[in-house]
Length: 586
Image 1: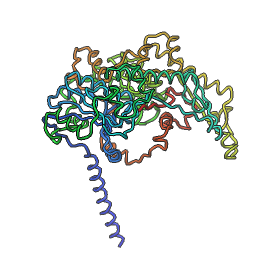
Image 2: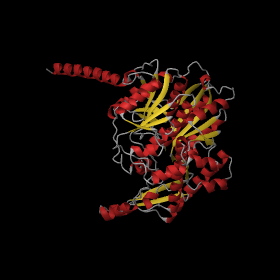
Image 3: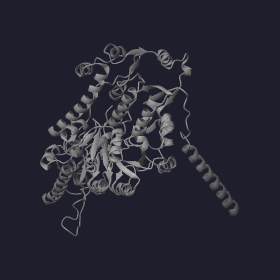
Image 4: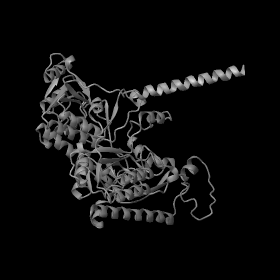
């Protein structure tokens, strides 16, 4: 009986193992089939099915099932596909549906719009159709040759201007007996301010207002120019709540025509020169990328694109910019003789100073042997700017949150919580006078505060000196534009923190020219990306480890939680070069 049970258990285990591998293989095969390109097709960009990201990677089949087919598309792949479509005789025009554009950063949206502008210069049209216009959605649609909008009422109109919310937690922390001790340098360095104030400081209000104004000015100037309007008139419509119904958009010149679904299909037939809508062949951007974007394996010379996306952290964390791993990646690229130039794509709000220093040191060594061109995504702030300000040239997007040259440290004191609320008493026994300094169970003494402040001051001085050297500026001038202040990319260009506005494509083209062999034509280069994206199977195996959504997801506290998600209690007192929050604009 025992032998039979053992054999039964063994057989079941083998069957389950085979079944598990078969299931993983089936999931890994989802979306891996090669699409077929019609002889004549419309390239379709349905932004409700696309999440523009920094680096392309295989999709997580579990996420695709949960999010009903939303595919992560790297911005460089999207640009390459649109460029290919401009030259592809099989692509007649682009049809874009920008509604529900809520999963992409501002920088990716700007770069996609730039790619669509380039597509139009080929003589082919971009046609958009909207039902629920948003700030980002209309900004993207405004590049189109023609904009159609539903004639049906009841859609949600969210073209209302940009805003950002700053959360303050001091009052609730006071009730909980938590005293957050913040040590910082920079009057604009508002990281941690949410814990020690119950309202915004004048400096923080100023930088946030000017930041939002700068980004909105950039967007509205492009939207207005595309529609033949003045910025003043566009803002007057928005401020006066004149854009409520589809007819309002038509009468004010923001769309070209209101259509029903049947009428929209007729438009497609006319543009595609067919009689029936069934004969209009469309191919999604996701599928067209699989067809048109291929590595140039014949090219011997390479341009490496290194993506530094996420928080800059110590230790190991492949979902962020972990210092030791990235230092090793950069070192490997430096030693690779086939890599002739490097684009350092930064999309980071900063983080650990120690990890930032490790990465910057490797970038310095890399620049000694190869040109290194920086390209900024949504963030190049604090530590993100620290690691990249010394590059040979810096391209940024107009909306990139840039600078934030400042540092801070903070330490929570829970003694009030324990004594007055939990009624717990603590006795500490230490070998030295300051042995419990970082325990979080008592407030810092004056000498301890001064000790931590000295560390913050030294690192701030190091930061400003690094920027002065990297950007060929005087330290006093850097200090005047630093102080923890966050700048938009367009403003950063005006004050010398970056060289100019440009996309990742501009950076790669510049790197090709800087390599010194005259091959600025990208067809002569192989573009290689680092870190190497995880395969579908690796993503599946990681997913099986389990993950949970944040309780703050979808709430006003979501961006605050993202900003401090990597802060750990045992790292209290560490000095950070980081943005105070993460910004999302709809």
